[in-house]
Image 1 (cartoon, helix red, strand yellow):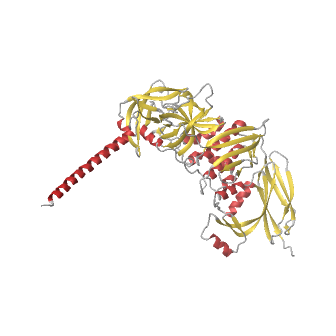
Image 2: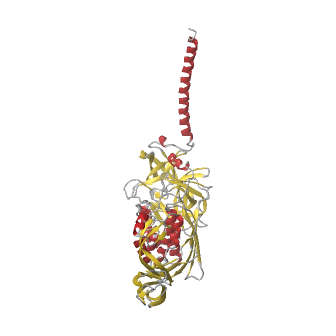
Length: 622
């Protein structure tokens, strides 16, 4: 009996503890619910409270920089259109949408019920008879804002061209042009044509681009859900808003400067320095860093398929976009963007050098494409779109890579597509650097010095003959080459070819031709080779043969190995077999021919053509 009171006391305390635990659980649940609600400000109406029949208004800019209002009525609530993604269907009406319907450039226009925002206009149907839009719920867009900035510049891997080495494509400039003409589609940015709900196409404003060039770029842009629009700057008399608020027109500048490429949408919500917009992805890049500015709307162009805003980006920037996600873009008006400066100087058929400057966003996928488009925009504007032309990339033209040697760009292109070959080469080199497999690389700047002329300067290797069929080591052999310039007289060049003194007797193969063909033949003989690191990749790029030189190369049969970039010639068969086992590709490859000597002869032409001769090396002791 003496133990009963303590036991009863223990039971009482146990009951109290049980009740306390239950109370704490209820309190935690209540706090959790309260915390979830507290994440949403008083001016936000969550998706769970949106009901069919609710009426409100939308805000957007249809003329100048003035935010206008239009009517909105909720006609549907669609849950789980994608994992944890919902959609609100809204019928729009009023002066600004009755005639045009849902417009490209309205993406991000906030929809309010009372004084609370429910989301952003983001989706539509082509050829719709009514202005019915899909609205992205505001709380889903706020999730993007809460991600912060992240590490920009690594959105996705860029599509590469096939080849025996990473630099193989640089010997095929025509393939580079085709590659960038379909670059966005090759990279997976393709919106299939469907008679279903789709993100409203984003107007992409091109300032400083000719209509001919835009016509070339348009099919690939349209396939990615982007509408190419020729535009200019807003101008001093047509000033865009200095402050961005919900409903303001916003421009995301992918390229800024003497040529500009800007995506236009609408601000949905702003909290202090932070804002969100679009309601759908720009390109779904993830963490990024792109200049943000206001935009001036000149007019709205009605269209049976899809109307769109004709706008111009403001010159003055207001912060940057730091996130590009499925449900919208998010940025900060106080955060500066991170960009790659590009400077171009062009001489030739103008009284004085023309200088151009632009900055391009830093991204492993988009930067090469934007470089290709922007450089073509400059060349098209300063010179012409198509036709006979010659472009020499002068010595001193470089791509600067932080922590590594500069990439030298001096080369020569001529013909109807010389400007595309030039821009494609620079763009593809940037692609190789930003998408290398070894380590993250940052391009700190690009400087181009170009010499331009309105003529085709191409010469074909017509004939090659050697003054002798046999020679001894150390002797000089006369070699004669005849070049046939385009619409010009034949040019014959004779020079002496030195036979190395250390050569053993045997047959030599003499290759004479342009740098591109010689390089392709060399790759075919050597097989696949992958650089061991970024430094070696840059070394290979810096040793790409130029197009304005005639190359003379002596080779002979070999049983060697190319091991991590180092040539090991004339190995015994047993040792060569050991060196490449078990690897059959990569940094180990068999070499069927060995280069003995190489000479390059500068010319004033882009050389085309390839010839081979044989020469017998005699025993000097006989």
